[in-house]
Image (cartoon, rainbow, N blue to C red; front, side, top):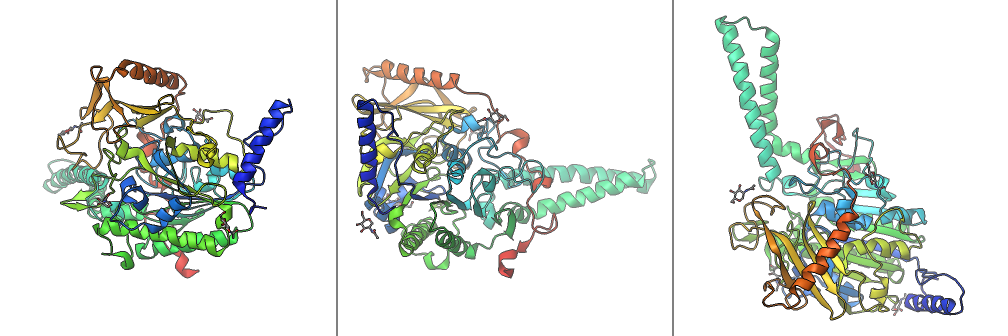
Length: 588
Ligand SMILES: *[C@@H]1O[C@H](CO)[C@@H](O)[C@H](O)[C@H]1NC(C)=O
Ligand SMILES: *[C@@H]1O[C@H](CO)[C@@H](O)[C@H](O)[C@H]1NC(C)=O
Ligand SMILES: *[C@@H]1O[C@H](CO)[C@@H](O)[C@H](O)[C@H]1NC(C)=O
Ligand SMILES: *[C@@H]1O[C@H](CO)[C@@H](O)[C@H](O)[C@H]1NC(C)=O
């Protein structure tokens, strides 16, 4: 029965295995947790900073429900995402592999999938933990944001769709929330497109006028076809530029249920309640089975869609309101677990895909997250603020309550941890970078298995950390850092996001060294003169980096070039293209 004391089971199985080894019997190993197979409820916030949460030290924001998870479970203080932006970070989370291995990275500055209608996405030959658990009999579902691609060749092949990757149910946004969805600000994407469209319009309009002039004055024998074509094209380009904002909203901001578009564009005021209803009905439907549910919040990404009830309620403007609303959603979901009697059989995990976005500011207004004492934020591959995120595990009875762990851990660790708990096997035909967290969480291990963690920015290795297990120090080396704009500021204001390469990135020779265990804010650079271990540490990390890089295989980059441009024939559309408009759930 699942109500048995799980930690007890865990210890018993380890003990049995140890005894077995001693008497030369080869039984099940510690990796079998008999009778466990808990339900798994994984909660992932979008762009939430580690400093935005009460239990991580924020005294002025109200996150009682997330705090409660920490009180009743295990809180990780050095939980690191594999990338500082969402698409690669989420790909690594689901596959347990650095995104350079699956190709879910860019090398040209287009850091995330740019449209719902692109052909890039999580490759079909990658294996998510959802897939393994589904094969092991789990009921699996994803509710909320995906942002890992949809189609390859037609608007309905769904080659990258969540259903293709082990989720038995999907309800939510295949793309991502963004400022454009609410016509919030002139996004970089929209601004760049507007410039291009306007350039094309002027060129075509000039051609049309020249042809028309030639025709009218009879100076040149101009046939009708090119004249009419160029005139029509000019009108189309003008209209597209004029209505670009609306086009983007229809192209990207829509909801799907499994393979069908249900709401295009989304009506934001009801999205929060729709998602919560979906979570409740999933939990009720599957309470007799082991289930895996990933709730991937649209909060707290811009445009910070917040229902009236939470507007103006926090001390931190619209951003704080949105964080508090998300915390309330967490509470609603935990209440449903309680009501259905699932709490003790369910492992709950809470995290964020990357750090808070410092650049999301307008004037003095804060619209992005706060990363506490950590330097930098979203989009910066190496600085702690972009990658150190909340990480909480709760499983009453099985995991200790109120435990805090400062060891380096990774979001990629969720992969082997969940696979093992669900009774599955991690794939043997590829490198898995995540490590099983269970021994650390239950307290049978003192150290995490990560000696080295690498911090990529696109395909560029910006930094690496070394957990020196004798002595317990955590060193961090930066090979490259973005230059903040304006110089001296803590972020790239006015640029949207800091670059990973190019003239506004500084290469460090020798690399910048910090001792994170004494200087978590990365404010005191160590030099050979101040740190006797300098060359030893740099050498040790360099050696690990070289070993890692020798093990990398070239794969197609899913976020580069033609993979990451909008293709009209891939555009999901619930009306007749290009009139993509419907609200199907209302009719049901
Ligand atoms: C709490 O979070 C808000 C919202 O991000 C932030 O503005 C504030 O500085 C944080 N306060 C503390 C004490 O960390
Ligand atoms: C759930 O687990 C807790 C902690 O082990 C225990 O105190 C409580 O009685 C359990 N609740 C149920 C309904 O089994
Ligand atoms: C580097 O930053 C400067 C100053 O903001 C800017 O003018 C320039 O365009 C940037 N270079 C690149 C390649 O983005
Ligand atoms: C998936 O396929 C690509 C080729 O499209 C290949 O390069 C890659 O190694 C494959 N990945 C795995 C995990 O088999």
